Amino acid sequence: MLRSPQQISVSFPYGKNKHELYTDYLICNSGFATATGLSAMLDGDISHDQMTRFLSAKEYTSKDLWGQVKATVRQIEQEDGCLIFDDTIQEKAWTDENEIMCWHFDHCKGRSVRGINLLNALYYSGGVSVPVAFEVVRKPNQFSDVKTHKVKRASEVTKNELMRDMITIAVANAFKFRYVLTDSWFASKENFEFILKKGKHFISALKDNRLVALTEEDKKEGRFVRISQLELADRQAVRGWLKGFQQEVLFVRRVFTNKDGSIGLLNLVCSDLTCNGEQVATIYQKRWKVEEFHKSLKSNAGLAKSPTRTVTTQNNHIFMSIYAVFKLECLKIKHKANHFALRTKLFIKANQMAYEELQKLQAA
Image (cartoon, rainbow, N blue to C red):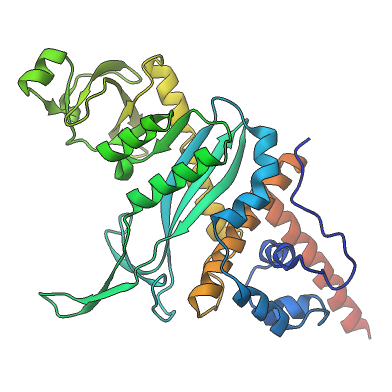
């Protein structure tokens, strides 16, 4: 049976396991996550100052996350496991700006928003999703835009570089996975070459304008066509070459019918030539797990509901939110209910207790 996160063994007041206490509070809480609110929940057994000092004491990183999830990963890891990468933006328009709480371009909204940009690595194996690494995108460098003369911020490293660093750490942590799954944002030649050098395979979405050749002769002669021009059926796989990438790959087309009846196309590239189109499509479908993870992170773990103001406390709240979703995943396996169903059960119980207390007050 899958083990739950480390249980609190000391009696009062939660000893050194404040990260367990804070993440439990995030799961139970439906409003803003504050140190004062946590203290009130415990009838003052832990003061809000203690929790504030805890969140300010050290900056939690992927190394700390791995320490919490490692035992679970060792139980579920399989040779065909998938390491899934994706970033998400949590808008926080009214929070003071700093190097992590700043402006990022949101591709879903088609504009820049102020908030947090978070890159996550999610390990998926045996039906279980475990976050194994994260990076908060930082923009410490400030400059004046030449055209607008507005002060803007820039990162010292790109998200592609962050992803490659996270893959290096994942390989060093020696858990089993075969495939790295990404969307088209990370479908660069440098990333593909890096993944192969690490002894792993990639499956990635491609933008419609990527140039491909289906024969080695066309490749040598420079006769490339847009991948959107290929005549492929749903889940059909063909071998070929990406322009600028030397290794032969598989191209797979996915065809979807949208809600409005229109047809949507998704082009995939896979480095594992032993796969067929059906297998590539099935494996890539697992990438949706990171979307579910991000949805739970925002809806069930209070990612945006912390009034923290400093870089350290904001980073640590993000870490705690990620760890809270991991704890929900452990509960999902144990109780066979999804994250939202588990939270609904907690809220119903809270409402029942509130109703009973109200009846007592009215009868007094």
